[in-house]
Length: 377
Image (cartoon, rainbow, N blue to C red; front, side, top):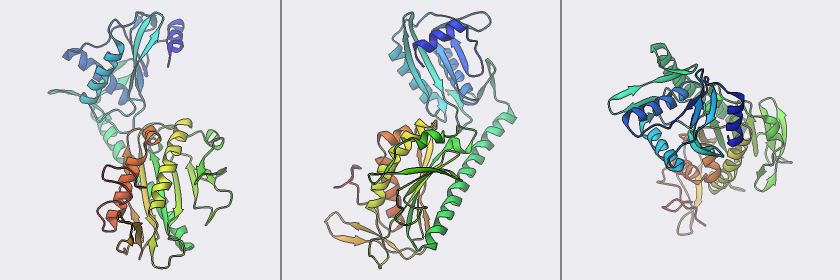
């Protein structure tokens, strides 16, 4: 979205519609202006998303006519409106972008609402509350049926996601048991995969370079979508690979048994390194292939009964945790509001998952991280 796109709207006389709305002036900071602004955003979020453009004059039949610009400082205005959206819309709209666009005729402001999967969204200010939805070129309050469907859809999506997560873990656990290996299983699950969201462009993924422990991976299509493997799998084609599913879910599995160990100890630092390496690559490729928005990051330990975690303690001594009896441990998934944040810094998510892992084995937290969250040397 840039100046050329805006000018094309004017030249074509683009009409307002289900996903596009023009406003001549930005909302005021008074109650009426705030209500109008958050209502428009919620209406898009409760439909299929959309774009709100301030500083555009329109014809009597709702077509883009001219850029009239915004008199006030658009950077300050964008910050103010972002704050209003954050404070007066629940749940928070994922991926909301409010940004100025500078043109030769003046600056305009665009508020872009991506398609959402966690509704319904409520606009609220003091005692005033609404569940608006975009219908054509107008906003209306969601009726009883629409609200009910929105809440049920959210619940059913959560259930579909959980069913997928556990079913896929079960498949990998069976394969691990067949070759008597202990496996860490990472899943990255975009919420859009369990709604009517975008599907990844697998051809883009196949042309992309991905590394596993600094080794370039090969890619090929399979029944699930696209699989990326090392040239010579160390254990099995199922492990040490990235599986990109057709709905946008990505998973990876790696062996965590101590090399040459027969006393039931599991490697832990390897999982820290593997996740911190893979998550940024997965995040970047999701964006590249057309997958955006919120996601869950899940980690499971499979076929690990009668094993404990091995680690080097802060004082330098090698030690291990108590052993557990259950065969599979499914850690609570970590919610990530924006997939791109994993590309910028995956370590907060990695640390929380590793803390959970150690707590399952009777330890307070993962010893590979310092108190302030940095990775120990």
